[in-house]
Length: 225
Ligand SMILES: O=C(O)c1ccccc1N[C@@H]1O[C@H](COP(=O)(O)O)[C@@H](O)[C@H]1O
Image (cartoon, rainbow, N blue to C red; front, top):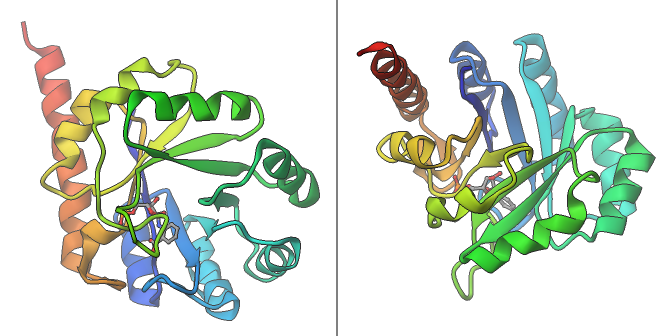
């Protein structure tokens, strides 16, 4: 099966259209004012419309958002999925799902094996998981730091857990990340930027090409005797 790709932190029509033409599945929009990728709800609503028309699913990325903020994002942007990238509790995930009737992807920051225990109570509640690196000390950003974690830790995961691998992925390391984890979906933001918050269309091309090259090589190896 083809690796599903989410391109996150999109803030221009060009980047959204390129993500679609490259066959990405999801376009992510960041609602976190301290992020260089932050977009207003109005901008996200416009870009989400472009994304939908181009066949992309849209993801609203929020960090410990309150009810009022989520209500507004859902009403105006009409996302297909909510990515909760803060310290949202199981009860909050359940409440968000009940209120909005949308799938929720809960993000977890991973540095060591024990960090994976945190997701246990969310299994069966969150629709999908996202694994990112822990932010460096003093960082204002809970995600989008361009840092990766030890992908081998995911070997301990229950194979039934549907997740997206993220954190510091680039065209140069995504093949190794996929080989080590067997992830079915990847999420990239900084690795397709020429400067914080500025997506680079050539880097977007390069990333997707690297994913597809990995898949072609894997199939070729599997087919050889
Ligand atoms: O990208 C951001 O600025 C951001 C801000 C707040 C929460 C999440 C954010 N991004 C998410 O971070 C990961 C990894 O990004 P990167 O490839 O390492 O830059 C990704 O899931 C984004 O959705």
